[in-house]
Amino acid sequence: MAFSAGELANIANAALDFYIKGPAFAQTIQKRPLLDAMLKAKKTFPGGKGNISLPVKGDYTTALEGYTHNDSVSYANPANLKRAVFPWKELHAGISLTLTELKIDGISVTDTTTGKGTSNHSSRELTALTGLLEDKLDDMAEGWARSFDAMLHKDGSQDAKQVPGIKAFITDDPTTGTVAGLDRSTVTWWRNRSKVGGSKITASAANQTLTKTLRSELRQIQRFGGRPNLVICGSDFINALELEVAEKGIYTQQGFTKAGSTDIGLAQISMMGLGDFIYDPTLDDLSESKRCYMIDTRHTKLWVMDGEDMKQHNPARPEDKYVLYRAVTWTGGLACDQMNANAVYEVA
Image (tube, rainbow, N blue to C red):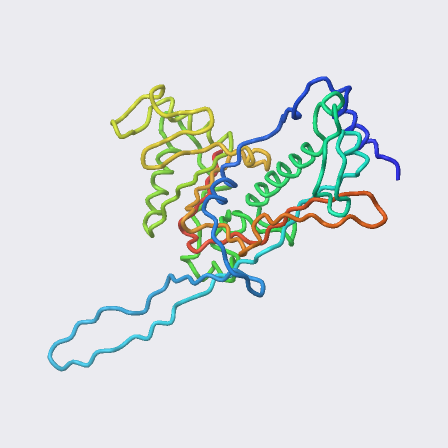
């Protein structure tokens, strides 16, 4: 089978007529604060038929009652435990490359069954300026990270075989719908905080509307023990927050401080009592630049099946094709055991 135009272009870019020696210069790699936080806090589970099941409770039966002398008293029999179920999914990313491409790159494969062993040709550096093999592996790693990060931001409706992300349970209208098997219209404690759409916040440098609203909201989140430690924002939300901070200043541990000496970086704003507001470029990519998600990673975690975290695969070469394959698989899901510890906000 002849090379496609894309394969020929790739070979040409990596061979002698590519004048800049070294790895290809990455032009579009972004920061991924959500992915980084979720990977850092991930937990493992042993397996199961098809769901990650967590016990949750928000209703209580036992109550005090007064008595004196020989008054009769009552006894409660609490039965308020519920199970929240989240699906686990299987994910794959893989690349293929031909032995012909590797030969052009100055590499011979010593084990043509799996392609595990390779040797460089003598004087390879005279013809190979950017390694095709390394570039393809780098492409798989970056492609995996981009796809995984985007998936964690979405609700799972884009692909039933992918993991539902934060939008599956941090919803715009938390009073409706069934999340993890629990009906939010009746289970009121199974709701996130939300001010979006008709309730979105209009920032005001003079009135400090956004910062005051966020402080008020945070008190409601903390009411039930929530402590959001990951606050990701789109660029427009960061801009709206900067508008108020630059006008009035913010409260710090040293008291009221004017903007200019506060911790305002290009990608985040730190505010005492509210934490770090981190710019998340993926929100911009998903047309959510006006949004902010507050997430408590103590209660929202990636669950990875034992032995299935970034498992590497080196499939045997088909007997009738001189093509090598490399793949990585991951099995797990995203789960939350306390919805009211999370929130979503939007600016006008």
